[in-house]
Length: 436
Image (tube, rainbow, N blue to C red):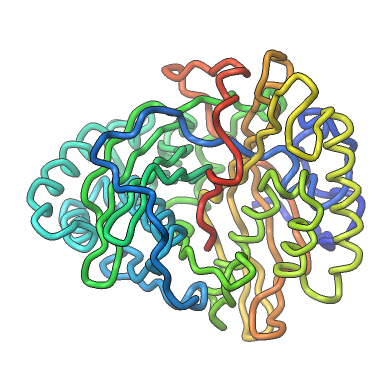
């Protein structure tokens, strides 16, 4: 892997090779926000929820729990979610990520154990058959151009770009996810391919947790890969094969401010903090809502860099708003909507101690304007970045974000990019995914 030169979160100059051109987002170069958030969001494909969706009744409540500690893993499946809307979004996202992972798709025994953990009572038998069928259909995409699948060389990652609650009450939830997937092999000569899916997940609350009742997937809204990002060769993806990196785990745990609850004082908590910070920098409110942006930065950035990163973020947000012609409501004069989001595809720990950590993320950032102007159509950029953190005030806070060479899959020939105006009905606060 290429070396990475560290850059303070508050720095006004971006570092690292081949970061996305600022022209893509219509802003001037510079600032952490440009690297971690500028132009990054889309929601899932729209559609009418089935009549059986739970009602959008008043939310159930639970006591906030520490991110990275409340959610635990059983047979590789994150379990133990809060009984909240965010908890339901997190469960839907994690179950979808697990179901698209290399181990789930290539290891029958592991798949059946995972299904047993996720499935609601009375649904395990049917869920196993459905999972086996889906795995059989997907496993070919993990071979690349080699003669057979090498489980150790597979690349199977899922990033959740948005999550919309179609229905929610104390007993169940229905969540529609908009995801980007990367599947292929680090062996051979065929670059892993990117794809987009719309996944509808039905959950039920039982045994004090969210359980999977049903799920269905279809082709999702397709954003083209930024033309400035050339596809990498297969070997470049070796840092993200199963043994080298982990899927992000979303907890849905938040404190009274609405931002992630304090993270566990362990490596998992540091990974969660890095993932959440990156996702929050990619939220459209980062650009359109100054109060939200300042509160978010206070919740994620270390005190040593808070003042400078706030100034830097304010400047970046102002440039985006001015250059895109976007008002405080997130729309342009003709009603076109600013669309941004960042999803984490995978995480790798570079270093860890009780007081400091360095986490590398592979991310997919979508951004642009949904409207009639095709030159501003939302596009996706695939970035690697290293997030440095310190343990401060009982949680993990970021001190630096270092962009490095992008890790770019190839565009699937089967998924044609959607026109700009097709993104008009997606995005927005209600579609924000749960954080880690």
